[in-house]
Length: 412
Ligand code: ATP
Ligand code: MG
Image (cartoon, rainbow, N blue to C red):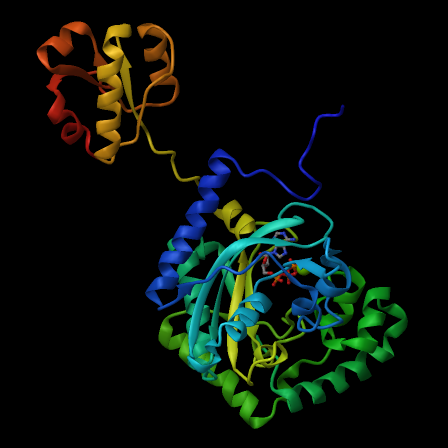
């Protein structure tokens, strides 16, 4: 039999990789808490309609990337490609549309059938934040500031630029869409097949095309600024004013649209030049229509999601593995005392390990191999005196310490 492999586009997250991953999640969770966000978890699979109805039937995710299957009962289910739809579904299911605003943080795996490459997987992981029930520009600015603070606390804000745009309100977008259709229709023959299709179904999405030829045409396309209604322009100005008050630097990029169809007003991305083509680490915007699509009342909302794999790749160093105290019994007779001491150290909050077998020499070698910071050595002679020999493996200094004092002495 061929050796079993992880499925294409998926990977195991082990050792340093998992420490990076956990560091991203715990830093984000702690920062979100400072802004008053609570963590939610929704199922990783949902009724297909949760996504098909709401992500828009022209989005790449819905047309090409979803893992959709019939379960044994014949129901159409989909592995979640993103979590905003699930969070809004949960808000409606839980009757929480009456207690707004809700400020939600989440993290977990997402699934998209994409061509795997650096920074792009079929199972990947996101952290995300949703601020549901606030229509003010301060809400947009605050959720962006949360993202910025997370990047700052991860030590990667220097490598990342916030790019901001507006998609306007419905009248602005209708006028802009007409202008885009007029422009791209002139160049229709030069558009990629995908973008010719978008031209008919959702011309704004051409701005997001990754095709080189399309990008050249996009560079000459009209921008939305001239088509914004007064109130949409004022909203966009308000977001910028609040961002300045919150101390978040940004540049404007009129080409930013979001990949999913449910956005309006604010759209933003945090991008880096360090990850090649997969340069967007965090992306989001305002999605005032989504909760209603899910069967709830009209509810304003704004949020973002960030790829944990991409953030992890930007971390300079993996957080260090915690270093253990190794307990080393000398001879079988010392083992029972060693086991009791091992457990006492753990209960005192110390990471402590003891090898399961081997003579004294081997156990000491193992302590060095696992990078232990100290050894607690127990021989018959020490036990008789109620002490253990505690050896600091950085300095090599060894001292006899009475049992009750060992944990205190090794406390970090
Ligand atoms: P892209 O343009 O890279 O395809 P997207 O617009 O599809 O991104 P979003 O749906 O906005 O991405 O997801 C938010 C973030 O999740 C992205 O900025 C990225 O960091 C991460 N992400 C999205 N798809 C993947 C993937 N297949 N593998 C790894 N990370 C991903
Ligand atoms: Mg994508």
